[in-house]
Length: 266
Length: 365
Image (cartoon, rainbow over all chains, first blue to last red; front, side, top):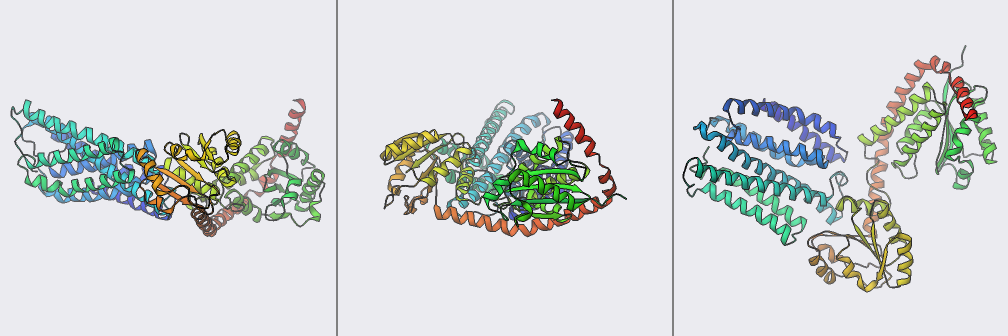
């Protein structure tokens, strides 16, 4: 089922790239017709898995990555509907495909990691909130990439075929800030739920852990990004570059932090 | 035996006639319905629609007798204008399938002065609406116009014929739109009160820009322009303070050296808290130092940049014409096949009866 979903996603990416390269408008109904079957299959797969496990399917690396890609597509569908930013498919879908392929490779290690069923709902909430937060950051990175493409065309006065098809840069900046703020809130609540669960359910404090330090660093980076824009008046270009770089760092180090962790090893 | 029906397109446009001639033949919107009514005649013209814009006057007619129908149309035009269309070389007469192809090209903007413009489609829709409400369209023209609208839509979707503006003012407005999105909350600052900057400011206002400030060496001239554009006039020296609040700056002073320098703008940008500034320099020699474009958040375009973009867009549209014509050819063939099949039904189409009813209702009213 996931392979079928992946195929629909790949087709929607190719179609978006072709239309953008040709400088032709991307009709919303075509976009949704290509994307929704894949998203539906993806949803059914996670739903069935969640029902079987009794919690949100984020208990191992395969599930977490599959849930991240689902969150990315879901968030994108909301954004595309609200802000009519249809060419976003061309910018974030490569990320979805790479992560989902990695997830399918990691499927070999697919086994339930939540051993204590009493804890599973708390852990499910904790992990799903953080996963949703990272999906928002990922989408913010894709929007930032779109911003950089559009901003470069404006700055260099070389307008490509996609120029009039992509949204105005101020709108992209606004969407990016909204996604960063949303992702930050989700990450914060997710981290707090982790601490609270440890304290109230396991009756102990979380020991110093590489994953915890890594999460704290990511949280701080995004806080600086948001404060820098709000209080220091960072330019849109600077914010976009920072957003892309920080998310690239998250992607590159996610595995390492998991591998080094005692409590978050999948 | 009933005569074989034909669709004709008779008219004059910007390619074939100068504006003085087109003006003479032009028919106002209010006069189109009476004109359709006057061409009822003896039923020689079965269906009829009139398109009259500033660039063209065209009559689309369905008739079994092309010569007689042409004579009737020419007589009507002669009575209105005082000019004899037959004596002029300005008029073109297309018969099926060339007439069908012509309407498709008109709707797609291929026959317009600015290739690919979309205004003409709305005008054709209006012409069709008037003819339809006057019961002067039947099976053939209904099908023809509906298919023309569908072809225009398909061409917009499959080609880049309508992409990018082809005039300097419109390019500037497009760029402002791609920076800010909606322009209705944006402030435009004019430095210098030249004619081109006024035109560009008007274009921005037509796209929603409401707040306008004019800084000029002659405050009197600034006030006069501010009155006509519903803006605010200020002294030229206060442009830096105004620039902190402005989103779009159009500069067109006659100064022999740059008025807006990098040094002055650095201070302005620091106080703008990261919000972008779109600078349009339409002065010759330039008013704005080129180096300012290195500052974050500044997008600088001079008149040459805008002209290059306009030319590129026009070249792109020209390149798309061949693709558009291929799409049109396919649809013309499809329409012609349908028209041949429907020939008898078109001949029976009771527009004359409907027309009589319409005439009666008009007289009663």
